[in-house]
Length: 452
Ligand SMILES: Cc1cc2nc3c(=O)[nH]c(=O)nc-3n(C[C@H](O)[C@H](O)[C@H](O)COP(=O)(O)OP(=O)(O)OC[C@H]3O[C@@H](n4cnc5c(N)ncnc54)[C@H](O)[C@@H]3O)c2cc1C
Image (cartoon, helix red, strand yellow):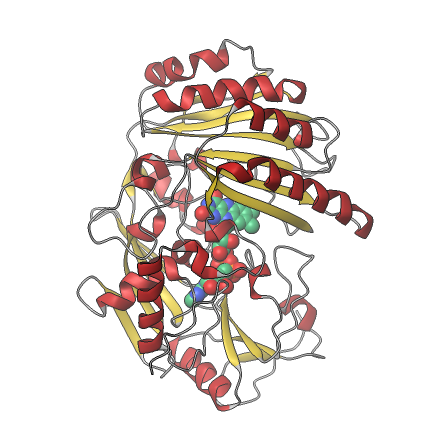
């Protein structure tokens, strides 16, 4: 594909505006995002990463690390910015006995979940196999085992990164502990991560699947689901969604072009216990029911996230409650005939609400439910109704809004709102230590502390 420019010694591949592969290089998962950086570098090892950082610094450019482009929106304008793409920093190794693994910064979840599953192990991945492990981990990372095992950020045991000064640093509990703390929640603001190590979990029993109900029953099903939540142990993580599947050939036939309210869950326990927990929902007579005892790989695609880039807009909120009146309003907006594609509600709490010793900057997340709404914008005319309904969704849950989860925020935002004041102040101090000139642009920006 295209040409490759090796314009300065030791930088590796660099693509610039006007190069034949420019449009491919600047593409992201959200095709509405029109990234226009000054250049895009694809270093292939730590030495080239350091050379790219020095090159950018020398020209007064800032550096935005990027892996898969699953969260480019918050970066906003890329004027004066060089994207450092990590797609050439590959490598995966699994130490099954130690339940640890190490991956290069290019690695997506899909490269590790099948191998882990064969070993009876699961990582704390999320809904999409296509998401990059490093970006997901640095922002928090909530997936199917989150209520039992917490966020992926806190499963991270070591991070290797190239700093603003071009040093390759290994940050772990014993080395550079402040940096290690800040990286686990503070995102790509401290350097370019080249590799990451993390714990994975043995999965002895897993009962997982989806119940599909007609979308007309959305209110009734969501009420039943929220009613169940207080009684569920943290071994079960469930998500309830209103889903409007587009009539596209790549969508599986039974759901293609149809709308449903779904309840998906992953239970770390026996089928008998799982069935008992979900009995009230099953008694409502789902149209399809895929729950079964499954290997961990079943979680990789349970959520049926789209595999290919799409044009879309989103909204998100962490909620302390979702009372019946709010559910009524949400289903009125997102139910039959809605312009939205997905309204997803994830059960939070459990380990997500517990601060474990040694946790990173993203130690916990507030709220009982995480809301995520998404509307596909297939043509410019669809933008307005999608935006209007996303605004209505946000308004419907505003009285219950207790925070935001940065990985789900896809627009430029004030990152101080994602942390309590003490955590935010400490993040800025660490930033001032490791990147005093604010060279690195994480998707959610943390500026260095200012000292008089
Ligand atoms: C379809 C879809 C499903 C998702 N599902 C979930 C989910 O279930 N749970 C969840 O928690 N999140 C989920 N997310 C959100 C996802 O975790 C974030 O979008 C995350 O930032 C993606 O990381 P990335 O590297 O793939 O994306 P990118 O856009 O490439 O990177 C995002 C940010 O990560 C940082 N970063 C990436 N690589 C590096 C690096 N090598 N060094 C330093 N910084 C780096 C940078 O700050 C960068 O701006 C989902 C997103 C999408 C689009």
